[in-house]
Image (cartoon, rainbow over all chains, first blue to last red; front, side):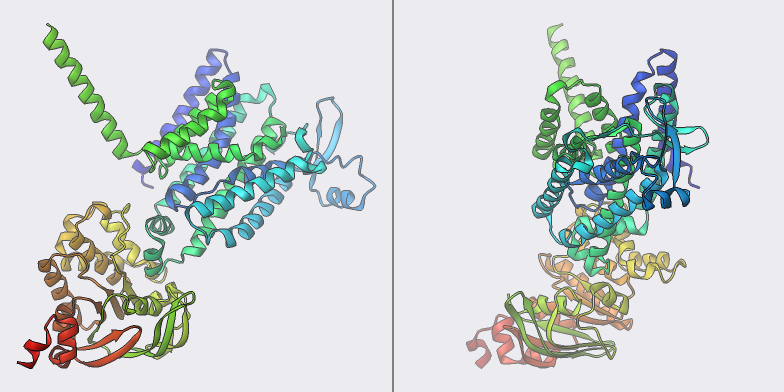
Length: 364
Length: 244
């Protein structure tokens, strides 16, 4: 194993541990709640970074995949099997051992479909939809692809907003906790904040390691060649259509997993998760993060989501992310956190410093 | 090596190639010369599988490759060095070259890719100097070297070059054509499309002249260089100097 390659990963783990210790020592563990949520959103952003930054395919519909994960698990795990015991389907689910028991907020024992099962169902649905949508729309390029994914996002948003089964504008709440194994639960219980923070951090680290290796692999080179020039990539024998589809599905899967976990963590899901503005936020964060920069996307994803979730942007939240997108597209269309940009920024800082020095010397 | 019979293709309703036939024997350089819009690039892209065949057949080593996907055609041993070089700007020189070996990577995981990389560096030492530089920062000539090197990494049986002289200084064109000739001497087969007819015919064994999607002339390089019509149309001589 190449240790040097994993140095940033160890730094990331270290940072997570330090954050946790500081907040616990200062008795400010409630900060971890928003950090946990930010970490789940970062899963979506990391997947989108590979799709947008490396393969060069934009998607303005990733909130839809997130919502697919969240709503699938919400619908399935809030289905009370005890009440539906008479139904054959419910009996079948129980007999197959796909159910699990937990106590709800009122202390009543309920029986419901195991979140592991709903996670698998959510993944199956997301993969199927991503394939079906991806095959026709990934033939499009640039603005047309953006429009098509935007349309897809709007459709999903309207479906969850208008369907009784998805709770319409209220969404679905009172989800049972997701018992991973042993004493590990994904739930919003304040007593479980620390372990939930580590669960989310673990998933992010896993995603980063996985995607970093993917980017450095033969497939990663192929993806970057598609970004460079699809035609030339074709001439090199890269099956561009297949790779675009695969990376689209992969990023959808990341969004879906994030949706399932965050929904269990929050204990509910609402239509705002499928909102187009959410997709715009993800795209904006990938852009500030430097487009083809996993670490930049992660850092910006954590910081901006955290600030947004803590309410620092207040009612200007959408304004902030829309504004970020406009500024980035105007001045840094290739993304902000990039080596070249960092260099010119430091150079500008040095120039500024020299100027101030000169002014000081002239005055004295 | 390559045999094309009555090939028709184009873009949408626009038919560019109207019944092109040609053949390339193993170990020779064949050049196709013609003016702008005569269908030279369309021909190569159709053979490479990037434009669908509408009619006719393309035989590569006796096997029909018309209608196959580009990756299958590259894997079969027919590589294209695209017009305008199409270097991957955001990737380093080395990564560009390794990507060239893309189709082989799965079949042989031995160190052969590394030795081929060395061979390309040996052929174009400039690329070794710029190994870690991004493709987009190279000069036009260096990019053309990189494009040829990238195609060679696929170990093609037939290499198709689309206007390698485009936008390059004459001295670089000479250098690149010299390398192409050396490749032929080493046993490679090359199909070269050029607007720079004189330079192309100088290194080619045989040549074709294409006009508005049809082959109008075929012959050895010498015959074409001495052909009055070719001299007038592509080598810049007027009637007066020919008749004298």
